[in-house]
Length: 192
Image (cartoon, rainbow, N blue to C red; front, side):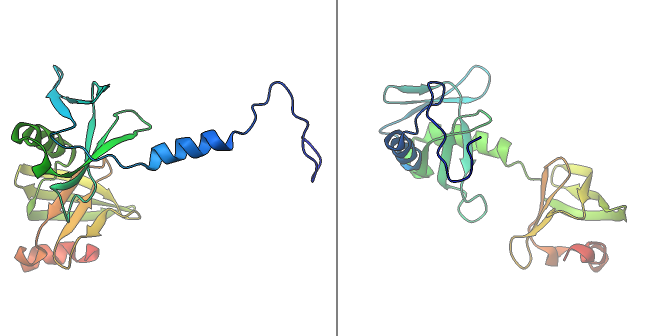
């Protein structure tokens, strides 16, 4: 390591910093590409996923992500590569800008990603050692799950709507806490 204030000598094994290349890569990353029925073709894959062709580019599998899942679920749909370092391919500004078949295909993918059972009844909530153990009935049936009390497991989407994420990152929603009974509200009181 070079002493403070001194520049290390450039050697053959060090790559020179290329500002122009970095600026070009940054510009590419920040460029927004809007996807619609005129410039993209989506297809189902044999494995039940979705692929897309945009001009000469082909992506054999893509992720479909809502940018505003609660406030605008049908607009600003991000199409991304499915890998760990997911890269945005483009954005569908509005689901009305794609064909009916494509919208249906993408909605299926979104429903899998954002599967959120609605809690219709709170049977019991037990708190122990920093965790809360929920026993509930949802629109998909009876369910038990655990949340971490120290985290951000309960999010208020509005004054009456809450979203609960369990320790396995499954999501549950109570659309209107005012529709719960007084007994149920008392059990939930710690989170309100």
